[in-house]
Amino acid sequence: MEEVVIDAKDMHYKELNEKIHEVLRKNPDVKKIILKNVLGQRFIGTGLQKKDLTIEIYGIPGGDLGMFMNGPTIIVHGNAEFAPGNTMDDGTIVIYGSSGDVTAHSMRGGKVFVRGDVGYRSGIHMKAYKDKIPVLVIGGRAKDFLGEYMAGGIIIVLNIDEKGNDLGKVKGRMIGTGIHGGAIYIRGDVDRDQLGVAADIKEFTKEDLEKIKPYIEEFCKWFNLSEDVKNRLLNSKWTKIAPISKRPFGKLYTPDLM
Amino acid sequence: MCGIIGFMSRKKRMIKGDKVAIALDSLKERGNGKGSGYVGYGIYPKKYKDCYAFHVLIDNSPKFEKIKAEVEKVLEQYGTIIKDEEIPTEDGIIEKVHIPWRYFYEVDEKYADKEEDVVVDIVMEINDRVDGAFVISSGKDLGVFKAVGWPNEVAEFFRIDKYEGYMWLGHARYPTNTKAWWGGAHPFNLLNWSVVHNGEITSYGTNRRFVEMFGYKCRLLTDTEVVAYILDLLMRKHRVPVEYALSALAPRFWGEIDKMPEEEKELHTAIRLTYGGAMLNGPFAIAVGTPHGLIFMNGDIEEDTTMFGLTDRIKLRPLIAAEKDDMVFVSSEESAIRKICPDLDRVWMPDAGMPVIARPWK
Image 1 (tube, rainbow over the protein chains, first blue to last red):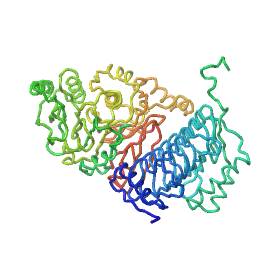
Image 2: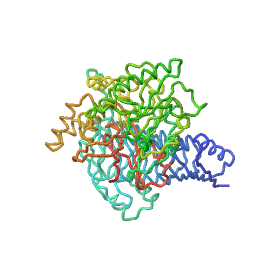
Image 3: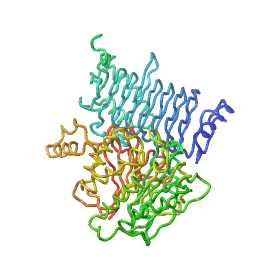
């Protein structure tokens, strides 16, 4: 049996997550778990390690979706609540709707694709180590404090609506507050006064485009966007936001010693 | 933590209380069973619609009759008790440490020009001076039901499903800084203002001193109480239009004010300077039920009850809003809204520090 369906209607998150583990225990070959009538159940997919597993969710999963996950793919047909991808290690989360605050919180690897908007403080404290580079791609817009205290990884904001049209200039404030690693790529212009402390606007180079291209292509594939839209995205003006320095607060407490 | 849910029918359609209880129950993970509460607007539509409905918690002790007599003494000073009774409750669900009592009440005609001030005085006097009694709501055609327990327990205890209202707010509490007791559960109400709150008011000391200068007394041992009094002071007493009053609670940043056109700059500067004591610091998401007579920034006067939601300026607590036909919802989580209304016309995350205001249709 390669595909298993679980009806999550009125089920507590503990029971639902235990059921998922039970399925995996009993059927090591299972490739797909479909969760129906999901409504607010938290921690779905937490800590799962199976790389060739896909979990499809119909409904609104609760907070901390795919937390600590290492490998699987989660597809959400709906919106997600706070912190999908929290401290995720590897794998992919694809959200067809929008997601809440602190999306991709502390991510350390893997990819999160959100077709709609994300809430406040998305990408907060993302980090990277050697070849582990977490990626968050946002189709619509991000609210304030995007990439707060970001230490590594890539955040890409496409700034398009559900039809693929431009949304106009991004609104967010305090972008990259406290950022000391990684980079935020926003399609379109960003004013300097939209940046938080420690963030800077850097030149968007060819290497930057090469770096983000595969993720934009993957985004277009997941959400079935046309070649036209894809080309427009790739050929747009991009703003790169990165740290002023590696240690923006190095002199905060000991200005005399450094 | 803490979970909030609020909804209103802009057609003023009556909705049974079990809806708010079901939605709140789905947010129980945000609380810890140490306080849940509800307020329904429009629940006393018949005989007592125009009476002030006082919901009072009286200690369930041998002194009960004595305390009750004290409460009545205060009430009778200023008007007439039209009817009073114990609020019906279900046995065996939670420990009944207080006996909830309601009074339908008319203020004496000689106070006709300051009726609402008199009601505020009565609430403050009972909460301050009558040992063992606390007024938990004092509006017209509405009532607060709250206790220590899980959302479903408190709903069953008060038989919430037996009431119908056109607007409901619910709150699942996770007390962090102050003790869990019935009066400390949300909503906090004064007249027709009712507040449910997720977060903490770290400026409580400042805010409390500010409202106490105007005669309000904070006696319920929870920071949220002060928000209800600030709203009453700013919007009812000082007649500050709602959008500006809320901008006093969550003021624009000075950096934003600097960039405003001259007139607006002057206004927002004045708000910050005049109402510095009303500024709420700390993380919060609140949902508020309001009385009639609300003045809007555009000069309109709202003759009807309204509901609004507001978060702190840097969005340290969640708030989601949604619409379906005549219904407007606010909640900590979208799933709580979809629990009672699966298909929504619109779902959105309000901007930090900017209110969402639901007004009844004319």
